[in-house]
Image (cartoon, rainbow, N blue to C red; front, top):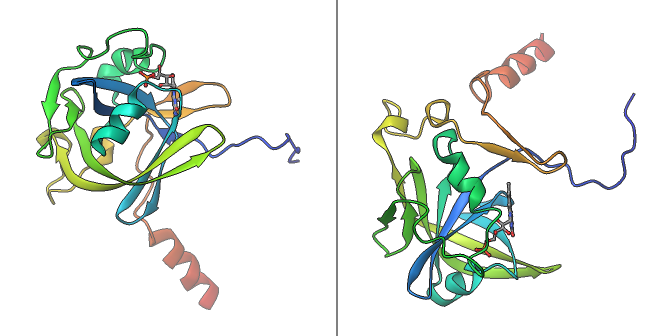
Length: 188
Ligand SMILES: Cc1cc2nc3c(=O)[nH]c(=O)nc-3n(C[C@H](O)[C@H](O)[C@H](O)COP(=O)(O)O)c2cc1C
């Protein structure tokens, strides 16, 4: 039986990412998991307006989205509990720089360098709608077809209700295969 557990926002898990931007001339890093896709060429990053990194993003109009993996989860988690308002986080990661000049996490095997196209303010959050300018992927996470292989990448996922990180699971099938089979059975 399904219970009504209130109006809990339960759309999890979501990928954990490190947002990188230049603030006051230095790189800064913030852990974010409220992130989404709003069009085939647009993603959304939801950042509370009080965060240190927001001013840098608004000033430069650029940010990087760095997929978090287990290898650097302690540093990523640190960037989710410590604010640049109080501590300099510029040295937490090795610095890589995108073609557009955006700071990127050297440890992350997959990074998107993004341009801010719009900001949607909602209940104290600044939601940055971004286009992807360049995507950088380590060879180790690319498949033979040259596309990111998420089974190799193993992005760390986040869920809010119990505030935990999850490991990415197994591949259970190719999209549309199961649906096609189901459709065929209906037609019989
Ligand atoms: C697992 C996790 C996920 C988080 N996700 C978000 C998020 O989606 N949006 C947000 O505004 N803050 C999020 N935070 C909080 C910020 O990362 C945190 O307040 C950080 O210290 C802000 O850094 P800054 O002030 O240097 O920008 C998250 C923290 C953790 C630990």
